Length: 82
Image 1 (cartoon, rainbow, N blue to C red):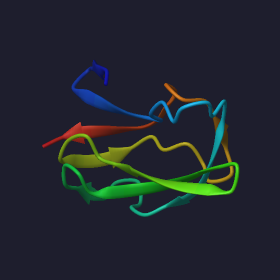
Image 2 (image 1 turned 120 degrees about the vertical axis):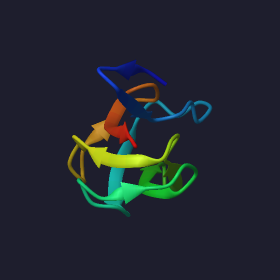
Image 3 (image 1 turned 90 degrees about the vertical axis):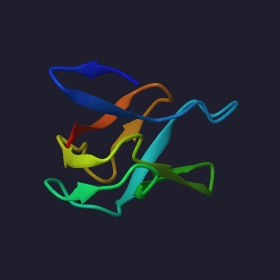
Image 4 (image 1 turned 180 degrees about the vertical axis):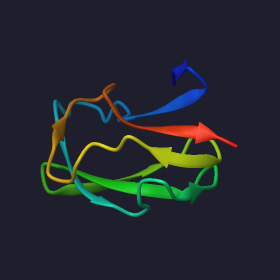
């Protein structure tokens, strides 16, 4: 989890042998407040869907679009704590 300029990264976790996932649905919109541990996105890998949770409370910013393929460890959004 990186913190750059007061923002906290929302990162795709290591999901075992999964090489890439697709962002299938954002559960919270850009600019919306989120709570730590709240489900904010769904990603799909090989027909399994995983829910990503906010690492901190704050405002969701700079999301990658739905349908984007990403690798584990990649930042898909940032959260402005507050």
